[in-house]
Length: 289
Image 1: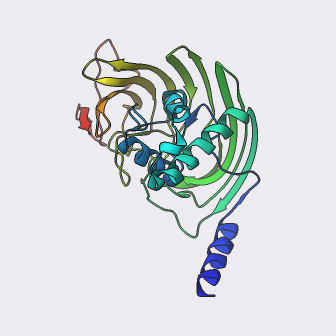
Image 2: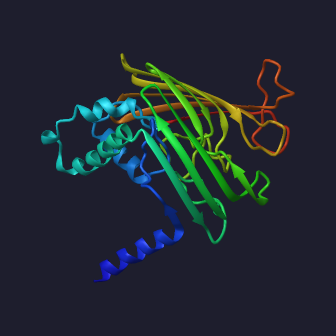
Image 3: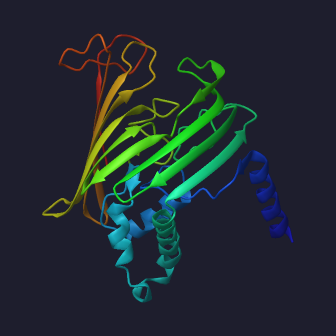
């Protein structure tokens, strides 16, 4: 009885916090950084050697892991891995079947959260989101219209409309290009993202990516470069970020990041940038595994 009451309280709490008109599944060309349980199961399968591609760059294209999932012999799968496998495979099948998705979501929080963890909960005071999404074989797009009370780069709150989480993406073979403002997460961490932890909102820009498989020594690898406009307290509001990630074995996933910030007026062929409110020029490099 105690466990039943606890379960009912959790359900009631979820209903009070948000109203969602369809299930929040990753039914899009990629896995977005919005589901901690899905990422956890994906990590379990990667550690077991079932998934061979690097999995620490989000959004993560379904094409990079779909072949590994489809080739699994369930009868030979360890019982400890079957639940994780079923969860990830179910989400993949939903992504392949649901070409058109329409969604409405509303949320309210008692106070603002300064939370930069993976799949962070509502960080606005209140928010209403609506979106329409279409996924075809080679391209996909999402139009998302949001009305929210959110902080700006100086911490002041105001009510505003935004197109956050809107995108257009086109894939040609192992390469892809996307335009829009979607949430990103680079690296294996769960609480703080060193590459994208400096901003409260998504960053609008252009992204180019390429995937390769079964290379000698480095195995499967992924390279990605992004340029867009971010939020800073100085004039360096243009951001250039690049990442190279490879997975030579199931127990090793290596990622290398490089970032620059620069201003429109100051860009003359060499990058200058800063990560603080002063004019100190700085770039940013880091590695993870």
